[in-house]
Image (cartoon, rainbow, N blue to C red; front, side, top):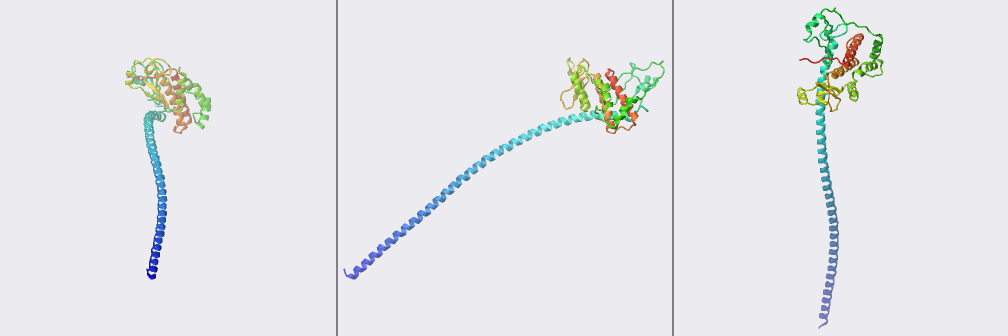
Length: 338
């Protein structure tokens, strides 16, 4: 082979070898670059998988909390509805009881106003006090059976009075002011209250209220007195249907007075404050309770400034109410006549 051709062959061989070496280097570098990219992609994919797992855990936790919150809200809503229903039922019951008490109090206030405004010791209303009528008019207004009827301010206290004989001389009621009692009343009126600390109220409790509300059942008597003092006693007539339904009951109920314990027809019953129990009472027990209620009602009116009378007229009205308590505790009362 000529030298020129040999040199050209060597050069060509060197170039091919160099190209192969460059190609291998490029391939290795490309492979290394791709491996680096693959590693980076794998790391990024791993991070994304971890983030997905974390987010999935958060989602599950939120779903669990949402379920618990929903269940708690439903339970609370049902509880609020139940409480609202209970409160509504209690309010309706209290409203019904209050309306009944209001009707009774309105009737008593109306009757007491009539008595206070139309009857005074100096100018008594003879329609409210038939015992002050002349014998002729008393005989004309008396019922068959030889007696008249006299109702208290609330229409509850009633007592029999026998008319004077036709040949008896005409008499009238006279009165004399007791200086000690009047002085106690004046001292009490300066700071009118139902507190027993005053000599006037203490005397009335000792001489009238205590004996008038002293019944065989002492525990119930004390409860009745407390209810009267707190103005929370309710007296209501017993319905005719209830009497017919319970007419065969011999122990308690409408045929036995809860206060005296005696077997008597009981056409009224009492309730003490907000208690559920009713106690049947005889006409005599009712007269004694209402006599005390009338006294407390009048002195409360004085305390509130509703009585437009002079002091002496107030004093005599208080004495009249004390006399009603004295008469009632002795067992005198009027009965309703058909």
